[in-house]
Amino acid sequence: MSFYQYLIFGTDGGGLNGTATLIIKVLDIQNKPPYFTGQPFKGHILEESPIGTVVNFVYPIRADDGDTGVPHDIQYKFTTGACIEFFEIKQNGNFGIVQVKKRIDRDSCVLHEVGGICTLTLMALEKANSTELNLGPTNSTTSIEISVIDINDNLPMFRSSMYNATVFENVMQVSLAIEGSRIEVTDEDQDDNGRLDLELQYINGTKVQGIKPVPDKIQGNGYIMLYLQDSFTFDYEEVQGEIYKLVASEEQAPMSKTHCLIYLKIIDRNDNLPQFSKWSYAVDILENVTSSQMILTETATDKDNGEFSKMTYSLQDGKDIFTIDNVTGEITKRENVVLDYEKRDEYVLTLVAKDGGWQPTVS
Image (cartoon, rainbow, N blue to C red; front, side, top):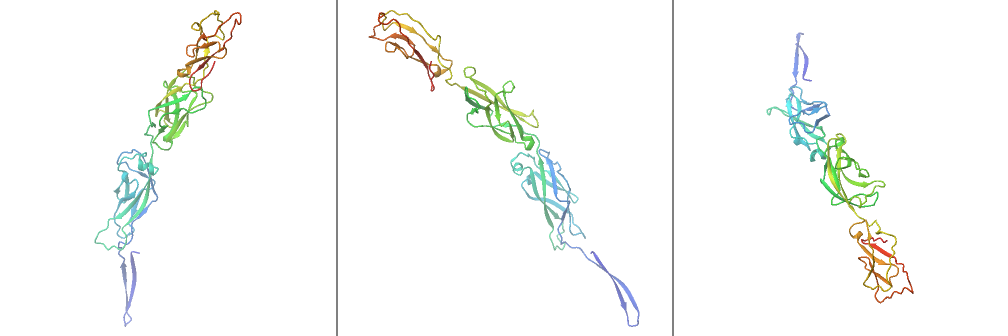
């Protein structure tokens, strides 16, 4: 109560009386802190809002003096909070107006760490006169929460603009071997804005059939393998290499995309047999042929390359009578061997060609 009122009766000895009214006024002193109204204080603002932009709150920020007799004006300030550098509060009567103080990037370290939710400690302080009697606190604090809303302002990025890959020919359902670091893609935007679709394309932009990015959808950041699907294989004899582009596009904005190049090298395998031009040969020789005279020269070909196509020759039958140059395939009679038509007029030889490499094949 701010006052008390009493009626006073007075009587003298002669029987006379009178009345008077007594009013006692209670003077307010500083003994109660300010109090906040309209809590909780929750606001939101878009990232990259210009400096000076006002943060929208569900309930306006306001504090009143708990001493109602002679209330003081209230001033506000932020005291603590992970995002305190980004915001400031200004006075508008007894209301506090929160504004952007510094560029807000939802994807930056501080805001990313707090998940875009800035919790600040707000102090309301009475502007009290230093000469007044002060028997209580002159300030109080509360928490306010500001949600920084992400906007789609970042393109996807690959860790490298180019990757080298290898794969053996004639293998199925394997991943391409990536040289060096793995393929990594990142979109610094949050939530839906950071969802990516991945597709492997030829340089002309058409989709590659038979090779699939795994996974083909990524949220924010991830590593990618390139996987040969089903029965898809490469044949080194047809193609020795390819250049692809791996495209990452934002699910919410497909035109926001980037790509890296994949240089694929096909590794040859010894998957082709040596081939002679004929299955059989007939050669007539004189019985007095000398060891220096060539009887037959026959070579084989191999569709493989490099070491896999280098030939060595040998005889499987008749090598006690005849000999072959293992490089040229030239067949001659062995020295000190006499051919006698009357004793034997025909020999059947088996010519063997073996290719090179670490898994040789024979014909």
